[in-house]
Length: 236
Image (tube, rainbow, N blue to C red; front, side):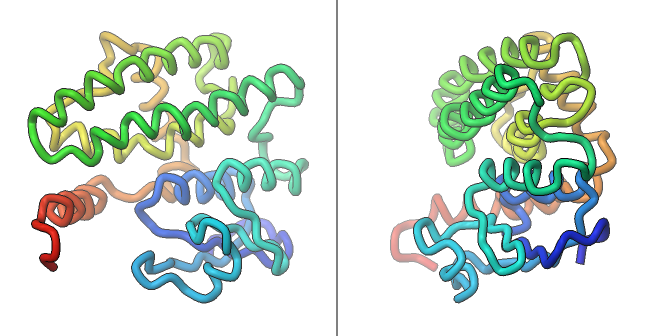
């Protein structure tokens, strides 16, 4: 049970290593909301998960008084709208800034992640070099987005962590672990000074540090994943 303010019955169905779950955990921590966390075995999904998200059958799912909310970015917006007076806002009040934040959060999911995923799944030096080359343009775009959204402040959300910070920040430990094994440096401080400094600030936020998985545990899981990926078909 995570501590915080009572907010009706809240349950979060998740998987500890998932960046999409991590971002929801951080948001709930920022808002100071109490919830029951239920770890899902993604190889043997629970009836509760299958009932709660019958379309995609994926985590995270936030269940509020028995009503499920699916898809991580949708969950973040729901949390912000359902508890507007609890904790700092996750989206800006200004309609244009709000639309801009939604755009970049979606960019992280649909463009950056899809490109970075190829690096994450690479098992040879050749694959890693090609995947790294292909994801760098997305990081260049996000460096420019940070300057636009932060307006010279610490976070994409300005003075406080916002939805874009949560979307990208939930990948940071994973990015570092993949970099370590691949011999890459995706958020190079010389090439991307804004993002590199932002990453350090984000990871130092109390709400982030309290729920972010340890890098060693992520590394252990990642090595297991790569071994499974590289294994011949049909082996166990």
